[in-house]
Amino acid sequence: MPGNLIRRIVIVGGGTAGWMAAAALAHQLRGRCEIRLVESDEIGIIGVGEATIPHIASFNRILGIDEDDFLRATQGTFKLGIEFVDWGAIGDRYIHGFGKLGPDLDGLPFHHHWLRHARTGDAGALGQYSINTAAPAKSRFMRSRADMPGSPLAEITNAFHFDASLYARYLRGLAERLGVVRTEGRIVRVLQRESDGFLSGVVLDGGATVEGELFVDCSGIRALLIGQTLGVGYEDWSQWLLCDRAVAVPCQSVEPLIPITRATARTAGWQWRIPLQHRIGNGHVYSSRFMGQDEATALLMDHLDGPALAEPRHIQYVPGRRKQVWHRNCIALGLAAGFFEPIESTNIHLIQTGVARLLSLFPRGGFDQADIDEANQQARIEYERVRDFIILHYKATERDDSPFWNHCRTMDIPDTLRHKMDLYRSNARFFREDNELFGELSWVQVMEGQRWHAQGYHPFADQRPAAELRAFIDNTRAVIGKCVEVMPTHADFIARHCAARA
Image (cartoon, rainbow, N blue to C red):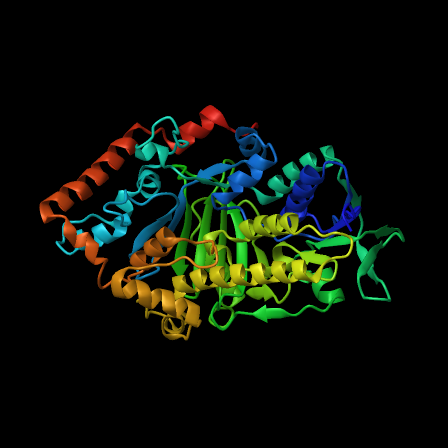
């Protein structure tokens, strides 16, 4: 009935997922609903998700978060993209950058004109035609200049690197100021209504019971509510995503402070490098079928830029997704809903979209099944499309130097991914489906960067005379180069605007 609003929400688990949900719900509901977050200091969080994609800025902005204050509090830096090293072949290097890739011309995306010009042998690397990929080569950064329309300086698109535990703490402060109540305690029992199996409360180790009408499962890989209690199954994608282990360790910072995440392919996986203000986050994601833990750890420790600041931490996971993210009166967010290796920094974004889905389909007291079905359908499509983009990084390769890469290069892939790869290889075409996360520019950069080259291009790209096209391509590169030169260094920009307090 109209006005029948949920009055009590229980969030199980803190960390990034729990406090993102708590802050967003409290901001939207503005005191009209009691929100309790239950977490235990005894239970650790994975906390390796320190790199993001640009959408996080809109989440922070909706909550009224001042960007410089947020970066100071989280030891944050800026991110213009992800640099991939040794993926297509050993010695290769490219950047999957955010933002624009050259200007459109004659109604066609820039890459069609670049592909035509590349056949002359005189085109620069694709990354030279985007300010987001050209600036990191010189460790430069500045925020986009909205007051300079038509300039590449107005097209800068950034995300962030930050300490995920500090971000959770920052959001906790915001959420508690908005009325969220945190309850410390380990859950020993989950209560369900006998009539329909809906969740009704959680019992803590001290004997207290926290009751609710809507439950948000942010309990991580354990999936205490959605999985262990409600029995919702998990779809395992390890037949395509072989990596199922990670080892993580921070190390001392080194110069220069580059505004990109780096992902370096190794013999049975890959290594991440995430520069923060106070340290570098490092990790080695690998397949336990092809490498043991000791070897994986040694490989990581041998490839740090500075002395390690802690002991290596080991993580096991199963790549995949929960078959339903919303069941009865429980919705799962974060690792309880699914897990992807952090190669394209999607896990925090998937928390964000999960929260947005909850807000857009926020239930009345009756929990309409049509709303629940829509949430599950949207989540399924979103996860599957992200899955395909991540598989692309392993499939599109010429590496044959290890059993792991031989397997990846020759493995079967989902039909949805095969269609995209075939369509691009024929004439560099791409069509976005179902509002999927990664658009044309992302797919183009990864496919071209990993040697999945288009054999043709749109025929309309042939309409310009060769000399005119050359002038257009060369001017694009020159203008971007000049813009990069006027940008401050990444380190100088942070020192001037958002340096963390000692």
